[in-house]
Image 1 (cartoon, rainbow, N blue to C red):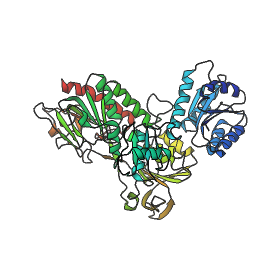
Image 2: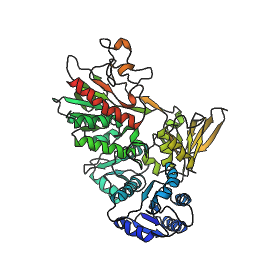
Image 3: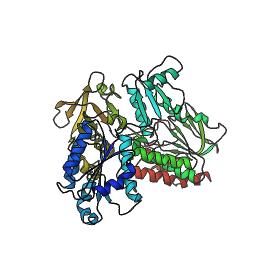
Length: 548
């Protein structure tokens, strides 16, 4: 059964059916003339085990307001994307009343119904939403990576999360399935699960996510040991990606070393709605992969899955050396863009279940496995809000725990408004996780009220921890000065006694000549995707000046 598109309009249903005819090969198209009819169609599809990918409504249904229509449909199919396609006779008159709902996440796009053939602006919006649905809800039709394992385990979950963040379709197969047996037969030796078959290469039995990354992307030793690159970037988040695009496009030989998946923390965001130029929002994974492809187009080389262990400063004009387990990279200039990692919860009973219901970050793969379960998100920042909204499409309930009295101090208003609108999301202020457990995986959490000290037990199939920022730069030498919290100091933030000739380093320059810092790792940074991208672009002129 193909996924369904449900098109609802009292006057224009036939027109919409004709307009959406280009999707008939890959989707089942259904029309309704009222809200109740569309709801009935959706229920029948769900009862038969099918999926609804998209609801399209005109701006003035006859039997219910459009906001009520989407709320009713969302109860039936919470994962479907939602479009208002207003007829041109009503587009302007209905816009003011409907756009407030758009800001609260009541629907995903407000579009003008096409007035002629080949309205590609309209269909670009449709395709973006269907692509987002396909990458976060539907199982892939074609898998680039096959994983064979007899049951769920933490390593398989971590591998799938890495692959999802890298935009690589993947699927898990049982060892006794046809695909599973074929992969086991190709494996050289006694199989140890999970087995991973990727990119038409021989299957491997990885012990870490890095083993999978190396299989797909290679290692730094592949770089000619005699070569010295102009620019080595450590970290593939928004700041590092922007530096790679601008550096490579301006003729610098550029290498990016990323310990995990391209995109960093931003790459785990299910939907970034306030990034300039994307009015319908964009997932962190898509933003990261587009930037990666853009950088590759200009000649950047990426090495994924390799942590930089040390930076050895170059002396007397010699290049800096970045040490990894897989090889060394020598570079005339280094940009540190390693970002930050989520702070650990520190509750032993909960930490033992990491990967078995407990996840650091939003864990896009795990979200699909939370259907009809209760989940908890810990954190009050934008990443936590985005994770909660995404999880609410699958989970029976989502509870956000914050130690503060509310979300207003730490989260953007557009996310707070969307959370308040969602009937599945509850915010528990002045609360913290102090215990947890289950038979082999997470089943419950102990939550303490920080004002009274009372502890209560909450059912929880999933716990998603987004606990704030810790720098990841212990590998840097002492010549790079950091603040009391471990973030890298740059520019005028550098202590005056470390200035040269009475002048501070350049804005994004560190105390080690030829080494720069951008994004979340930099002391005083804004901790926003747009700010990190801006710093990544801004550092390239400083690199040019240094190289000259």
